[in-house]
Image 1 (spheres, helix red, strand yellow):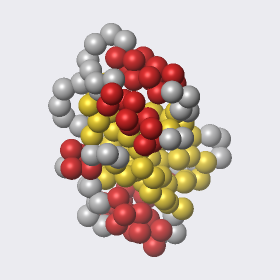
Image 2 (cartoon, rainbow, N blue to C red; image 1 turned 120 degrees about the horizontal axis):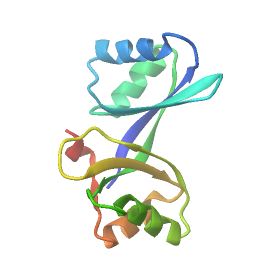
Image 3 (cartoon, rainbow, N blue to C red; image 1 turned 45 degrees about the horizontal axis):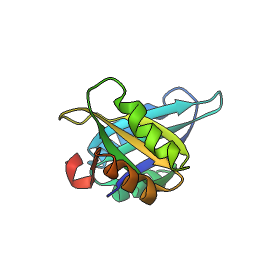
Image 4 (cartoon, rainbow, N blue to C red; image 1 turned 120 degrees about the vertical axis):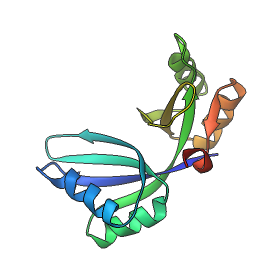
Length: 140
């Protein structure tokens, strides 16, 4: 079970993030979580939203480079070493983690999104390790 993430590529200039968020708000998109990573020239905005395909279309119609990817949403238990356990089981299976970021979802533990080079295998390993994963319905 995966969740859809929107990635938006932005020039690293003043006001670009504000512009994207206003466009999504005007389109009625409910943003559930966001992460922004930058370099000196560009940034990648990663979003979880209730209507990811619609959000992508709105952004593309406004001239932004956007795509939808699947990521694994994981509830990391609130205990010492829990994140290390999740990352460790993925690493032990020879799966590369491209990035992780925290999610703003109510509930127990600390939800994170994980992008790997093999989401199907990684999710199976995570579940086998007894760690809860989330689907799009859990983000509502």
